[in-house]
Image 1 (tube, rainbow, N blue to C red):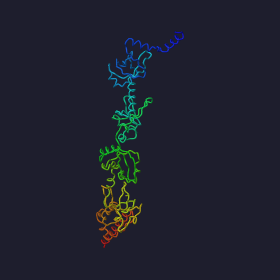
Image 2 (cartoon, rainbow, N blue to C red):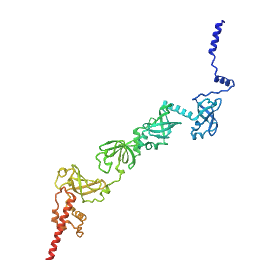
Image 3 (cartoon, one colour):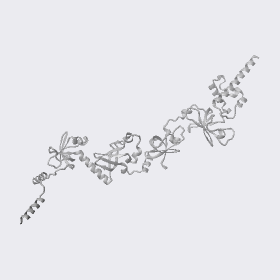
Image 4 (cartoon, rainbow, N blue to C red):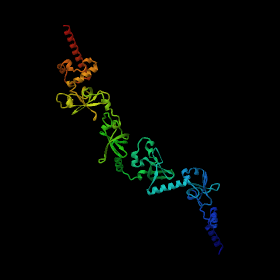
Length: 460
C-alpha cells in the first residue's frame, strides 16, 4: 500500500467517526451499565408518577436520571380541587420546561401539560368536526365562556343555538347571558390559534334544531294568560309582530293601548323589547295573539263611573262614516262615542255630512254605555227630547240650586205641557251650558210669573 493510499484511508475513517459529546458519552455509560434512561427535551409532554408531595413542591419521576420538580408559580397554578386529588404513586401528565436548570434540576409543569393536551384535543376536534360537552363558565359583552379542559373557549352570540338566542332578553351582557351560567352546552370547535390563545366555539354548529322545531316547541308551551318577553320584529298598519322565544305573535292595533292609536309606530319600534300577554293560541294555524294593553290598568271604569244613560255631554266630532259620526267627549280621559246615523236627525239623511262636519262642537245625549265592549252610544236628535225632561230638570236643580220645594216636579207640571212641548226644537250645534242656561231662565221666569199672579189674587 502506498503512502497516498494510507493517507486517504485515514481521512475516510476520520469522516465516518461520530462526534463525541457529553450526552453521547453519558448514553454510552448508562447503556454499558444496563440502565434505560430517556433524556427529556424542552417542550415535551411526558407521563409521570408522583414520587413525593409537600406543601409547595411535587417531585415527579418521568424516567430521567433524576426526578423532575413542580414548584413556584407552576405549583401555585394547579387548581386546588385538582391538587387535593394528588398523592404519591398517582400518574399525571407533565410538560418539560427546562431539562436542566443552573442547579441541575429538571423543571416540570402540570398545568402546561394539561393545557397543551387541551390544544391538541381542540385541533383534533377542529379537524374532525366533532363536538364536545361542557358547562357555561361565564360571559363577556360578546358571548359565553366555555372551557375545554383548562382552555377557555368563547362562543360569540351569533354562534349560540337558535333557542338560546330567542330566549335572550335585555340590553346589557348581564341581562342577556347571566341566566345561562352553569347550564350544560354542546359545542363544536370552529377556530384554533395557539399563538393568540384563541379558541372559538359554536353551539349552533353542534345543534340539530331548526326554526320550525323551535316554533312548534314554543307553541306547545304557550297558554292563554301567559306573560312573556319578546322583541318587535316588524310593524304593519294593523299591528306589530313580536318574536317570543322563536315563535312570532301579533299585537293587533286594538290591543296596544287603551288610548286610541292611528298606527303602531306611535307606540313601538322594530327591535324594541316588550312584555306582552298571550290572549290566544291557534296551534293548527300556528298563530299567537298578544296584547300590551291587557297588562295595563283599564281606565274605562274610572272614566265612566259618573256617566248616566240620558245624560247630556259635550263633544267634538272627530270622524264621519257612512253609518254615523264619532265624537270625542269633553270629559276627563280619552272617551269617544258613536252617534249612529239614525240618531243624527229626525229627518232621513243619507250621510252624516248632511248634518255635521269634522271639528263641530255639539251637545249630545248618552243613550247607552257598554262596559264589555267599551262603547258609548250617543244621540244628537234626542238632545231636546221630552222623554228626558225629568232628568234634565233634576240636573237644573242641582246645577243652579233652584228651590228644592219643587224638586222632582216635571217641567211640564211647572210651566204646563204646552210650554214644555214648545221647548222641543230642532237640534242645533249649541253647547250643553247654553241649552241648560236658556231652559233655566225660562223656568225661573214662569215661576216668578205664577208667584206674582198668586199674590195679586190674594190681595183682591
